[in-house]
Length: 463
Ligand code: SAM
Ligand code: SF4
Image (tube, rainbow, N blue to C red):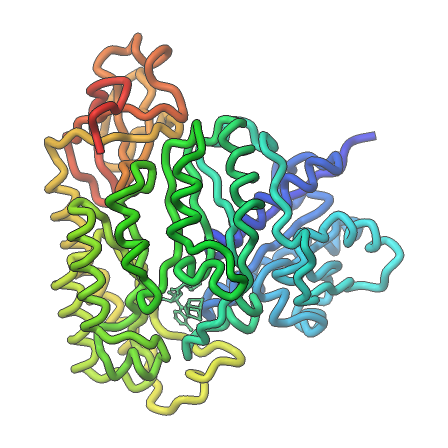
């Protein structure tokens, strides 16, 4: 008998990517194998996002396509996980009657039990319980995806911040932090299995452990920093209102902590920040940026920006552009505001027309492109410590490199993607390996990445 096969389609943030990875490991433990294509899978999991209307539409559009496959192959199990699953629950049946299984945001670790119950249960089987059993954060088996260089480690779930536009508190529940011992155990296991970089995940890592009386996030970082074998630590996301001097200082103190912070500002206008319930001001944000740069001169700062929040005037929008010019972000994710269910902003008047929102978005993206371009250009000629992730035979866009040699890919400490070749082809086999920190001289700035040449097969002496 053939083993059963699965296909997971992930939409949305790193939290979903991490949950999908965990689901894949559970399925592997159950004897499932990856399917070559979604249409051929015995089990399809669509892991969804409902943070923006577009992401939700994407999920329903994929589910629509799966209806036709399911009509041909009724034995295929269609599961919906993540934020849309949590938000819709039983209601999903109306828009997608072919769905067999609805897995809420805190039920993904119950996947095995749900699959066992499914054959005896009327469809859909829905688990959107928000309870938080002790195994809710169950560690992924180390070595489950042998060869991984970088892994996400969930340190918190949910959010208590209630930003006026955001669906996360309602679909991911109240903020809950995982005990530090469990996090450290998981990372020890990952490092022992060869993982070199971890990214600690939470909606607001700055408030890690406050409710539970655990150690602070900065203290947790310090303990992760001491784990042998690990080369790099990253984290996301950081709410500006909770950024502590202790955490800012960590960038100067902890040698494994990468000099990069994702610090979503959302708007540069105090009026809009107040309407968004962000609970900080533009001045506070700029002060944080100055302190971070004081602590760590080369720190990369990235951000999220929402344009067209209800009531955003031309003057408010100008304030956002002005803040972007002042800060000079390394990169930003920019979004047009969309109404989400069960959020206070949905009931605000003075909605901005779609066309205006799209125009504002284009202005933000153009401004950021010029800043990112200049920042990348400034790195040309420098030597960067790059954590090698793998290689591709296809040249990166814009390099037109004709070579039989492997083109390696990795990231700088500031999280910029670097494609590089070794000067000596024979070096490929010995000195460049995935997971190795190497020194790369940056030769060119590309649109979204950097191009360079291997300088040394270690990164000693580099920050
Ligand atoms: N917890 C993080 C934070 O505090 O920024 C990330 C939350 S959310 C998953 C990621 C980003 O989506 C937000 O920073 C915000 O810019 C954007 N976002 C959230 N709700 C939105 C909405 N209703 N419309 C447009 N963008 C939204
Ligand atoms: Fe959403 Fe705000 Fe929580 Fe981030 S901090 S998840 S934007 S409510």
